[in-house]
Image (cartoon, rainbow, N blue to C red):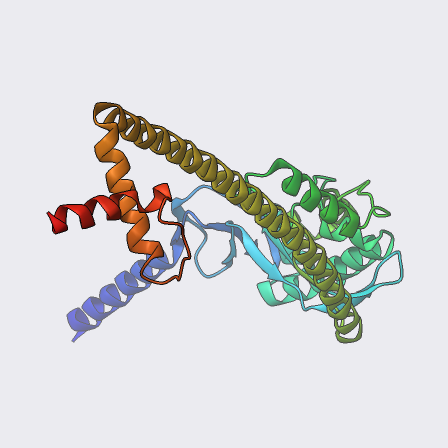
Length: 330
């Protein structure tokens, strides 16, 4: 019996020792950092390197915090700009824990950290946007914007006219002096000092979306429609002028072609008449009497068949008829 009790005691001691050794070992992942506390008091430096680690079992506690970059997404809110324009701004940020000891003492967990970030980042975003005009929140530079692509228009005059229309439509009273990129940097500079004692570092603050409030958006849309309609009318006017120019060029080319064709046809007719006259002359010179006879027959055919003539018997016009009558009498 005593031997059995001794064996049980040895087994219990081994189990206790094994449990102690097991609880003394812990691992740290690449995305984690650990703070060891003993009775609520921090012991040693934070464990930042990954691997297998050891602690005093039962009396020391392992507090694990993320080491990788965390996300903060703000709620969209209505903010007035420096030129009294109300807009909806949706922002986001990226942050990380750089001092886990301070983070554990002041914040403790991710949800509490996000709540503190809401209280710090949202006012920073509001203060910076309220202090600057709307154009600073929307644009980063004064780079010229082109609403239409005119690369497929070959006429340089039409291209210049369209570019002039765009310049007229583009507001010239707004000039970017700070820019959206610098505004986000100013937001970061304003918020970061308030997070240093929390052990949190802000990597960046960005604006996800900017939009007008509903009332302003409706008036802006109406103004944009009116400006687009005005530009469309000017473009149509340019197109109509270009169409009239094309029609005029076509009419001019048509008249020029017709004139050249008429001159060519008259020249061909003249040459043909000259050649015909030359042929007639050559035929007449070969046998003038026969030519005179044939011409007389043609005249008889056209004149005597439809007309009544009173002529003297001595008329030369009837010479061939007389000769024909004489031949028949013989």
